[in-house]
Length: 132
Image 1 (cartoon, rainbow, N blue to C red):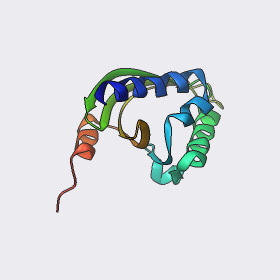
Image 2: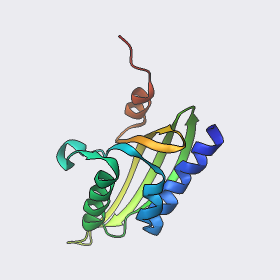
Image 3: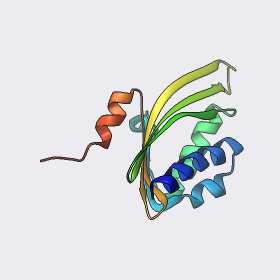
Image 4: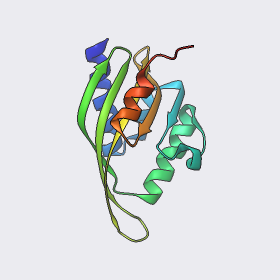
């Protein structure tokens, strides 16, 4: 499944950058959980309705946000991505340029969970199997 999930991860970003929410949702498991970097501030995003709320919130704030995959590593049922995001604020037109990392967990060819991280070390730590 490794090559398949790498292609699916790339397709997720193509769908986002084309603003094709329906196609993006087709890549998401019905029980998907997403955790943006500011998830505690933004709220809980579960299922397709949660993805829709995240989509709307992000694009209301940064309407021209583009996410470019700079690196994608396959880790079995997970992918690790380094993303470069560019945008302008909706209210001020202030430029935004950021690099962040994302871990995506896959089940049955669909994204079941993704979380964004400020650093590669945090992302790699999140990929380790839970112990104890």
